[in-house]
Image 1 (cartoon, rainbow, N blue to C red):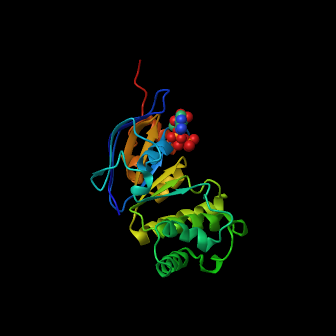
Image 2 (tube, rainbow, N blue to C red):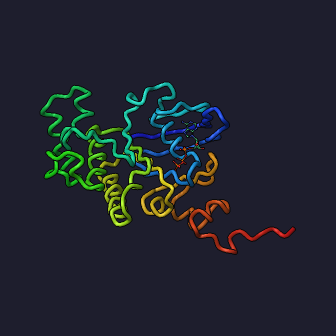
Length: 247
Ligand SMILES: Nc1ncnc2c1ncn2[C@@H]1O[C@H](COP(=O)(O)OP(=O)(O)OP(=O)(O)O)[C@@H](O)[C@H]1O
């Protein structure tokens, strides 16, 4: 489990800032959604936390330790993508064992960890299959299984459900949320879908144009949107909330 702290973080890929003045504390065990429209910088923010991109300015800390210069593998975080990123030639068991084999853990320990994760995710009967013989939802579960076997400090999700149909997406939302509660792990979840953010997150970070617009519980954002962007994005803008100032 981990606390993730961002202080005055900025990112510029070279053609202008895509994130500016990001100050955020993600608490230990919390489920935080990074929510905003396409291009607002939410994936970049997640990738900065993961160490897949370097911050142009500011400090990123995990449990108080400055990680700006730490390689992704040394941050002890697990990332789950929408593309699953499973190895097609490996079985489910081999896919889930992979991160532990890389760490050269003893075979018995790997088997125990994979069996436990598979049981938690309802994958026990699928362990000998290859990814192509699985449904989208099952693949997504394997990707999560591969993340949880490592017992990382935090889970970083980048739109993990956007390849799934509406019904499965709804089911997986509940599964991810339940898993989060079971594991007590810190989770950071990128989504452009306000329903996903509102139903899954303890707190939502609403982003637009690389700037945090509001941080709060789903109820805070719904009942007290900080500005018209947040209200519009949640589709809950009422005429009384933001009366136009007379000219
Ligand atoms: N590797 C890169 N090099 C240059 N510009 C980039 C790179 N990655 C992202 N950007 C730009 O940074 C901005 C933010 O992109 P980012 O992917 O973080 O947004 P997003 O909110 O996750 O959007 P989406 O939901 O469409 O993925 C965009 O303008 C994008 O074009």
